[in-house]
Amino acid sequence: MDDQVDVNYSVEEQASGSITASVGFAQSAGLILGGSITQNNFLGTGNKVSIGLTKSQYQTRYNFGYVDPYWTADGVSLGYNAFYRTTDYKDLDVNVASYAVDSLGAGVSVGYPISETSRLTFGLTAQQDKIKTGQYTVDEIFDFVNREGDSYLNFKASAGWSESTLNKGVLATRGHSQSLTLEATTPGSDLSFFKLDYRGQLFQPLSENYTVRLHTELGYGDGYGSTDGLPFYENYYAGGFNSVRGFKDSTLGPRSTPSRGQTATGNNGTLADPDQDPLPFGGNVLIQGGAELLFPLPFVKDQRSLRTSVFWDVGNVFDSKCQQATNSNGVTPSNTQCNDISLSNMASSVGVGLTWVTALGPLSFALAMPVKKPDNAETQIFQFSLGQTF
Image (cartoon, rainbow, N blue to C red):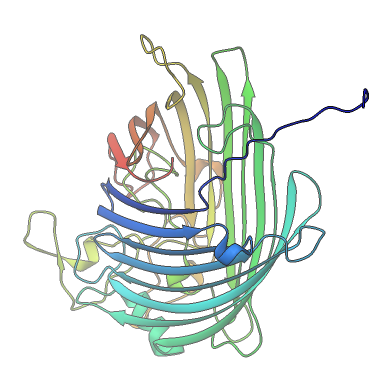
């Protein structure tokens, strides 16, 4: 017929599964090995299944995930996950107090789209944590274990909101993203605590080649009921990549009070006075953020896998309760930033950064100069990482 035409279609099906392996290196974690298997159309159902393993110098993670992205016709998703991770700081020369924690858990989550760019997520996770002390474990950890024991079964309920208008998933140059998450243990848990976290970033183009990025991360946690304060292994840390560059990983914020009679090894390999060598201990309040000017790298034609910037980072971690507590020896911790949460106690730095997305993952460099250095903070002018997001 004159009003009809024949149309021939050629359809090429995209691969629904992938196997990846990664090798990375970070100054704070050493060699990082990872691997994962992902199937986005498991048994033809359209559901996503993933299995992953990551191993670094002091941490090992195993995880399994299953997501039905269209559990309902309205786009409500349903997901299940299980994980096992071990974190061991007991015998390593790392920048945190000496302990180890083994965690085993499983959870379920439901995601609900409220617009084309935003989503609500609700979850419930059961998690078993086991604490192990080490040779140089500090008083604050011993005190917590004496009060609460060394093994905890907690049920965590979470509610979150997220929004993203970024133009790209990696090395975005336009749009914004933000997320707000509340997590709290439920009745029946061994510990009672909550954490509230916010993350946000904005990319504002100034011209075809120049973009300003503003970013912030805020966190607050505390105990309630029978639990006095946020458990130490849930503390926030600051310093290093994805935080305040120019400072060593996790060295900002409150420090521990080492036990009397214990010894700690100094940087030169000799025994140091433990009372003069406190370790970063983290805190229940996190404030950090910054600004970056993104610009093209000179003399490089293809900029799609490169990002160069000049940046200003600011942030710190605080413990809002540490001045109210005493350790097992009746000594009040000597942290200087516990209750005085103010701009005057924030660390800051300026510098230049470069990220190159390689086949092994993002390779990032930063050359930073501290502008404001809090007491006890440890600086690190040159920093790099391979295989971690930036």
